[in-house]
Length: 625
Figure: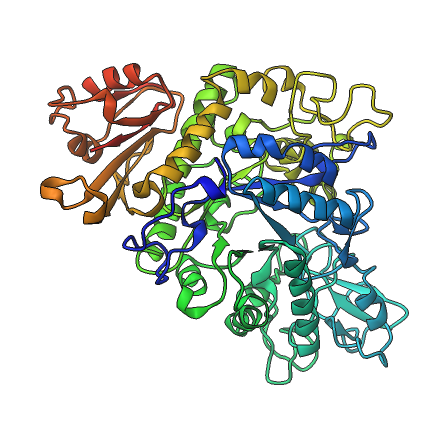
């Protein structure tokens, strides 16, 4: 099923508050990480022709939109999120002609293509940055250049303008001898932050975005877009810099303070996004805009995605995949279901009236969810938990995002040595935290196995051959990142043939969203919020035009129950009551296997379990009342 084959939602059903429902209200997005998807020339890196060659696979899965991680020209310091030319393709991935062919072939299949866009920062090799190194150049104020701290020798330790640390380790300031000043980089030192306070910067970004849309791209996923507005004083100065006496934040054990409180969701965030909408998206039909939104609350998500405010269509919030209590991702306590419930309930309730939310557990920056929250200790538990987690996510209200390999139940890599890792963040933080004594080498290696971004970046597992079909087994160059050892068990060729596979379960989930308006647009309400093992909720849609319900009221309800553990569980009280279970949870007045829309176990097994009010390990189902 493709975009052109989906059932449109009637406008009598409210989605995000727009007068006319947007096309993406019941769509599913699939993220492709190009360097790890399909290599066609044997150089060890995926490429655009490789993606084109797999479009039939994506159309068969049923997704509507392909989101491409960056394929622009780049030195690849941060795997393409350091762009040196926004209007060219990196030779690693192909050419502009290859991009045009991908767009044409995708559109022929009813698939839309959204490009990743990184405009909080560029590469230090971008022409804009190179020009800005000259104080007399028109680009001199396109980045955050600042002199050394007063009384310090430029380029020496302690001379940085303030105490901010980079998210990738070390200082967030880098000294440039040519200009004689420091530039701000929240990420790698090869990723200098653009100065969005400068209107010329914004105009250049909008011009580039229009160029891509005119070329046929269907929208953008905007990397860390909520970091573009910095908190500055009346003179335009950053906290702790020069004459600005505002503190630049508490200093942590690594010797740095965090720029996040001062760079996330800044005072001009709404102004910049509204201006972008006016200059780029007004008057265009069929586009999709989604922003990666570190530092954004659920309430702010509602404002930014409210169509009346004309900013973005949806955002990625991260509190549900981040450790609670402000802990470091490398030293966090074990994940708890209560944290996930709290966060997702906040996301859902914030957009009850207007706005929209994105649904995701995986992406290129997150470890594999089946290893993180599921159970990959045996293949049976891997399959069960992958399905249960998928059902939980896809039955929420919002737009689901599937990350490549997620539909197969791909797992973490569990690399044994540091030299197997390629991720800049992982390598930098290993050295910083072990050399500072914050963590032991053994503890840090365990943390990398659990949380490193490389866990999600291992090559796509197409088959059981030497390189998992990502590249030919006789290719002259090995894949850029080692292939997961479990490719013989977890691969697309095998799963497509197995009707009980994770892949075919995802096909059912995606088809349900396309076909059932209760799933795509119904109201959401948590059930049994305090249960530590079972995640349950109810979806309700009221519209007489849909039929059904008592006396033709059009009210339709779906109860979703998910056992998020490898132990048996009891269906909790509120869910049991809606399902018609008795007080003891052992009797059922009228259970019907026909009302089970989808289950992680055979339908007859789930119906039998309902009779006793119990759940098998990782048993999850959606039941239509």
